[in-house]
Image (cartoon, rainbow, N blue to C red; front, side, top):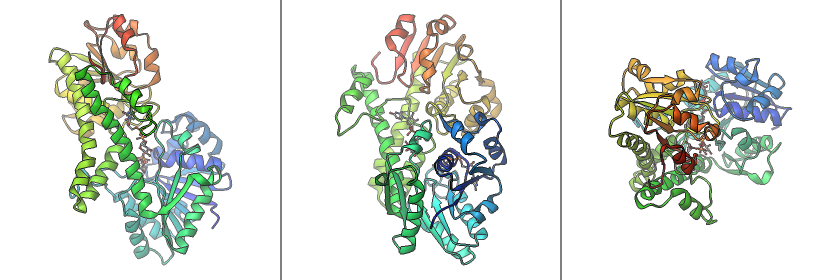
Length: 465
Ligand code: UDX
Ligand code: UDX
């Protein structure tokens, strides 16, 4: 089947950029991205392409080129489903906050809603593509819903996990290490797989498009993220040991990374990993393992998260300890709130947890992030529910000027590795702070010697004082 009309449900960090790139690379395919959130769709349609709701380097330009030509953003979900031959599901799958599997299992409520909506609307055969990261065997559940509630039309379910990382989404989509398509091993299944493969083949070399069965594809996504997160937790575990022994974790990373069997990527010690995927995917893995009674497997992967929680807490506790065991009524400046640089996404960002810890210690926190707005920062804290919204608002300030954020502060904590932080006038920042001026680099991006020469009491992750 030659695909000429695609619909994507979910205009988020995954659906938006992925569809924009498909539309740019496949001008013969009409791509419609739909979302329940009318405000978000309106932002995607903003005349000024720099105002689209998701910040990703290079994305505005691509949207500018394809939007209105063969890329459309709409709230008319049913119409888009009806017209499409292939429907991507790219809605969020948060960790359950209630009931069975609370705090661990993925909440598939939105996925189920999408499946029911597709079943109700479809009048001809459709290929449904899981783009959201899902627990293994979700495709089966989607198929069940579609087959039992549909209008007698045939559905093929494909798993096509997304490997893009935020901040580099556009280049990851344009030039992926690999694309993975999982489908049924029946004749119809193979045809559906081929249909999706030929979409990607418009710009990706065939040898980088892997096809597998559905479950291998679903599990590969969770496994990839678990392995990546494990590397971060492994180096973070070493960072604590480095601080005790006098080793320097940057030197250790470099030394082990040059071993080609280990490789150099994902070995930056940090205040802890964040993002919408790592924790959620590992929790999914742990939950699945437990549900099959594989307790050792579950414990093994859970340790990656335990280590990450420890790293965030340890960083915050170190600030309190260094500031003479009290931060009560002291101003602590945060540089960065996003979970990594080059994104405005803050989901599970380490900064949220470090802030929460310091607020419990009665600190006043002032934040600057180049791409994150005040409203989001307060939402993130309110979502934790650790204290009243009024208290959060009272103890937090957000400014649009980093020098203002740091003015009069007792300490600065670097929480995100934004490049611009390296080039600030650190002499000026130092002059305007309380003394001793403490600087905690949670991302190891600043030049330690330079900062010490200026006069800062400088601490980075994984380096003995
Ligand atoms: C993605 C993946 O889909 C998720 O599985 C992965 O773990 C994280 O990344 P993402 O694109 O980042 O999610 O999520 P988000 O930015 O929250 O976008 C999801 C969109 O779906 C939202 O705009 C939401 O309004 C929309 N949505 C949700 C619908 O349109 N319909 C629904 O029923 C539910
Ligand atoms: C991840 C996967 O990389 C991507 O393939 C998948 O599709 C979605 O999940 P993302 O969450 O966007 O992508 O970001 P990633 O670059 O993986 O970083 C995750 C977290 O780990 C960030 O908080 C980052 O700062 C942290 N990290 C990463 C480190 O602390 N040290 C490192 O060396 C690398």
